[in-house]
Length: 152
Image (tube, rainbow, N blue to C red; front, side):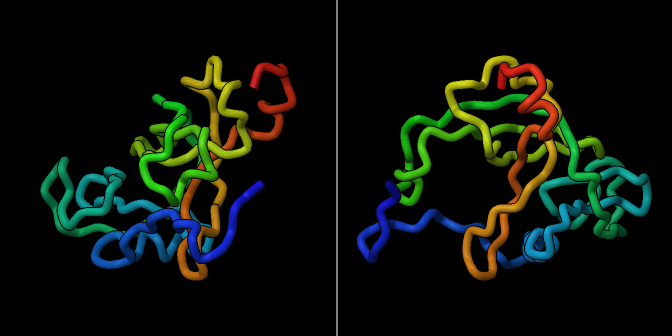
């Protein structure tokens, strides 16, 4: 049972300022977008002013396919912030997106003790409404994967 009330800490939220503001604005619209260099077409995440590949400061936001594979993961069993006390255990993963960038996010709709063979598993983006103005990207196994072989 989830506890509610003034004595329950809220999970920390990301900063909505600077270069990350536009990233989270896209997420608020349920669009996963990354910066893409206009000089060499390289995708990048986390947002920054210049391309690490060619040094160009010309870039634009491009919508991602929202698909990727799990590069690495861990199961969080102990909350390091009181705002996550009710969420543990949960899966946190590094996802390699189809566009080549890697990002850290939660894997949802997955029982934390059923993570065998999760590395290289295909995932798709979903959106978690964390606060009135904050929507976070998370990932889940495609529905066919969850039902298909019974291992996940």
